[in-house]
Length: 247
Ligand code: SF4
Image 1 (cartoon, helix red, strand yellow):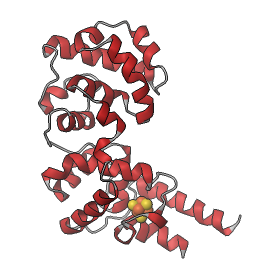
Image 2: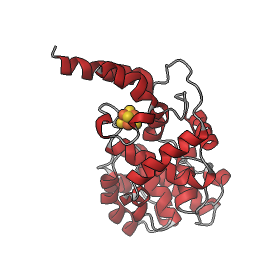
Image 3: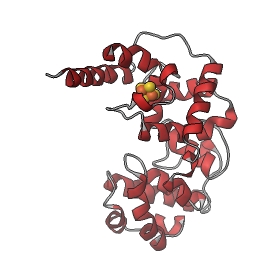
């Protein structure tokens, strides 16, 4: 095997273990270091809050539905079904009464569309029947809606209701929190708490968007582009995994 391939394979193998949280405990990152790293990333992704799906979220109802649909798929794919879905089912009452096969037909291009169709119909029905058609504006209320976990609830509270109650930890945020050194665990609940302890509340909503942008653009799960990363000098994964293999 050529040296380049060996290096790439070795990095990938070590990243797999690193991202899985099976590392020795590291010293806890200082808040000032975390804030400095976040400032560098924010500068890199000034428009991260304006992702296509976020811009497409008109009402709180649309935000809930699009956020449920966006799991494990791309913004572009979600945007393709947005128009047909909401022109046929513009509110919680109409979507809650929809035939599942009709909804599946509209969203079939998305991954897990059987489950997602069921989730958005159930969610819409509960919003219509239990909340009078208005999306709840409390974390407790949102968590009663089928298909809405803490991650989705955090996104809805921030983007639909303008409240920073927590930090949405998706697959990118989980991976980057471990790699950069914001957290030492693979447990998303603990990662959220670790991030909330490190960053001021005013940054919680945008932190998710910035980390997702970095995960999509540079810090890919399998091929992180450390050579062009603006936080290489501060990244724990780079110092302990990538750099030693490169040398
Ligand atoms: S230095 Fe590499 S591993 Fe660290 S955040 Fe940047 S791209 Fe990811």
